[in-house]
Amino acid sequence: MSYEFFIGKRYLRAKRKQVFVSIITFISIFGIFLGVAALIIVLAVMNGFERDLRTKILGIRSHIELTADVNGSMKNYEAVRKAVSEVEGVVASTPFIFTQAMIRSGGSVSGVVIRGLDTKTAFEVINLGKMREGEIEYLDKIPPQILKQVPRQDAHLSGIVIGREMARNLGIFLLDTITIISPVGISTPMGVMPRMNKYIVTGIFESGFYEYDSTLAFLSLKSAQDFLQMGDSVTGIDIIVDDIYKADVIARNIQNKLGFPFWANNWMQMNRNLFAALKLERRVMFIILSLIVLVAAFNIISALIMIVMEKNKDIAILKSMGATSFSIMKTFVYQGLIVGLIGTFLGCVAGLAVALNLQKVSLFIEKVFNFQILPGDVYYLSELPSQVNYSDVIIIVIGTMLICFLSTIYPSLRASRLDPAEALRYE
Image (tube, rainbow, N blue to C red; front, side, top):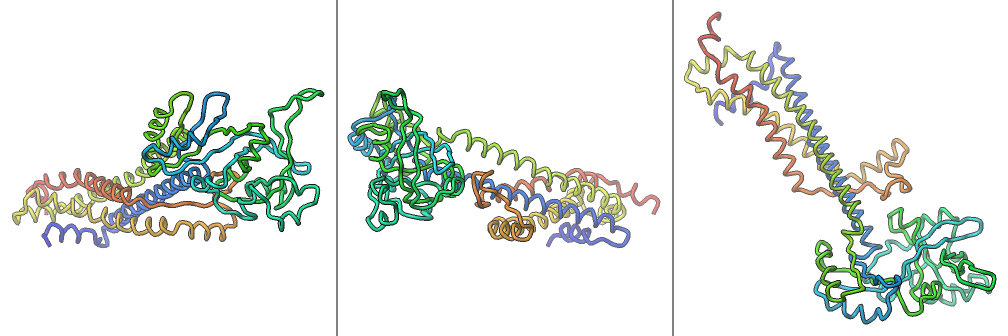
């Protein structure tokens, strides 16, 4: 151990007349601890939000949506799927039908997004989350044992699967009969009438994403085609790829291969504003929370200046004994770095402990204070997510230690320039 480090460490132990300096040092350590811990926890939450949003969005939605610009429908979709499967990077595909409608149950009415899916191929591409009640396979054919539980006059109806929040908001239960009303009317001798069909609720799903659970409903591909009178056409084809971050390149390759009138839209384009906002928010939060570390760094400067003023005689004696200006400077740099190292280490331990157990911590807080941190009807997610990115932790540690080092330069230079004769003149 070098004598500079030994002396710097000894100066952290305050004597009675230096208690105030010791308090400032403690405040500096606590400030760095608080800043590092807050940065780790907040960035972990932001990373968790982005990961969960991406997972849930790409569960219900595909990586690439292929549509045709002509009349909003696509014919010969099986031939198109075959051509798409030959593009490098494509893993699976499935046809889909998309439309907006209204759902009526008793006296309750709500807007709904209808998606028709092919149950044979859809689940290679999408993931509805958890089926809380019923089965998704009942969309194609409702088993006889299930039909026995519905009124005889409704036994011929097709099935529909709705989200848990929609079922809760409209008071819909499994095997209830609901009416879907299309905004696109049909011409009759009495004029244009809205298109309406009845369906049996054969399943209730929960994706964990409030927007989907409250507005999305699924029909079989055949039922959706019959309801919209589309014949053998579909709206488009959902595609998943082997690398989601190459979806834009693969989408361009698909579009170049198929040509006009096909249009391939990837998940980055469809959710660009959302993920760009998350990235910007993460950067802003990093900058704001870094100010806590900067405030602690100013405390380090204050404490070191006061110690330099207090230790004038000690510095003069060291110089008289042969210590160089550089050695004196190293002594106070070591002292500031020790403060930074202690605060950073404690902050890392506390930050990682909370970030890695954030779900348990949030449940404990909700239980103690009897409130929900993330109400599902307000936020996209119902649970507080967390994902520790260790590269972020390394950046935080390096940045904090760099700030602590820079804060020691001025007091150390001032100490190294002290004239021993001047300091000892009146002693």
